[in-house]
Amino acid sequence: MKNNGWARRDLAALWHPCTQMKDHEQFPPIPIKRAQGVWLEDYDGKRYLDAISSWWVNLFGHCNPRINAALREQLDRLEHVLLAGFTHEPAILLAERLIQLAPKGLARCFYADSGSAAMEIAMKMSYHYWRNLGRANKTRFITLANGYHGETLGALSVGNVALYKETYAPLLMPAISVASPDCFYREPGESCAEYSRRMFIPMEQALEKHAAETCAVIVEPLVQCAGGMRMYDPVYLALLREACDRHGVHLIADEVAVGFGRTGKMFACEHAAIAPDFLCLGKGLTGGYLPLSAVLTTDEIYQAFYGGYATLRAFLHSHSYTGNALACRAALAALDIFEQDKVLENNQMLARAMHDVSARFTHHLHVAEVRQTGMILAIEMTKDKASRTPYPWQERRGLTAARHALSQGVLLRPLGDVIYFMPPYVITAEEIAHMAETARQGIILATRD
Image 1: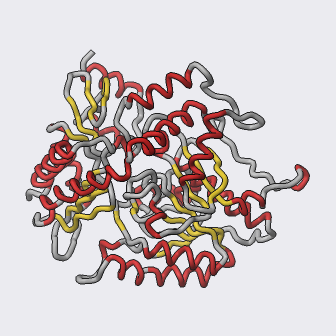
Image 2: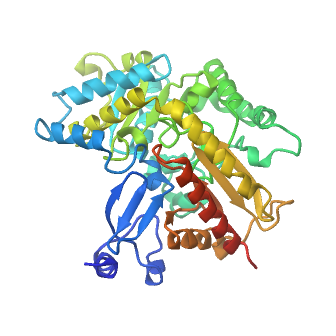
Image 3: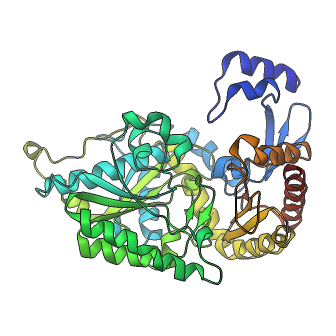
């Protein structure tokens, strides 16, 4: 069966995520038959370079032979067993390795199945910790403007991207929102570090005012991904860690998107040499193979839940597939690749190649900013470069660029009018050049009046 046949069957049965389904009347979904490395192939034989790692999850390429082999071996041993009252080797080994890799002080691992679930767990743990200590008045969370932490109701409550949140506002708990250190708004001549330091003032003021009622501050370290790949300086994280300690508030680091080498280090918090109280991980954890997330926390927080059954202090949160053996085995294989292939060192060369091609966009009349953190590069289109006036969102300029890229065999999925690259770590310099040139042509088409 060819693309058209599968697309017709799809549209008769499926409802796709983050999609206005009516769009598919004009642009049917593309059915993928197979994939290898950075390339996807449809049923008509056309190939597409996966420039966004299939929604930021794929680290080492599709159908990676080492992860495939690990999963085949695990399939013959154990596919899944409940993690309540039972345990298994992959879950234990993965928890040990994550703790070893994580910033110092994180000593316990709690598994879930998605980034949103990890956020819900961290929020519940933080609140429950304070409750177990007799501080039940601490019920609120401080978050950054333009932040995104998932789409379940708790995670959505602490996010601040209106596109996802506004419709469901009546269902959500109120959070305290603080201006973002997003360096897109820095003054001419002001460094990102200076701006991020200046923008810490609103956070300090919020902590001074609300610390007594606040469980935790929640941030995406360094890159607000779903908010348009907006970036800020590590100095903000260092200031935040100190302030949270001083005010007696937890720090939750949402590294679901930015963890596992995306920013140039294994975890983004390492750029500021800090350890959060909760580290939320997901997406690339299994190399893009299976849904798995994890919350790492401290032994101090763990001990606040430890006690006799009658104390009712236990953390009663669960998912049926918590610590799934296959997912944990895929994650272990991914960590093996990090260790054996010196991935972070190799990514430095790939990041330089991405930086080199960014010069193609810098002087474009309708590109307001090109920004990069490690293996994440974003190009922001605007109607007016000098004033940074955005295009009306209804014009969907980013979609025009993305449609052109697909026609040329490159998968991009812009965030509004922000074109970004977040490719698998197995991409080559030549593929980076092809990806960038295709995006450049798309931006030219998208910004024509």
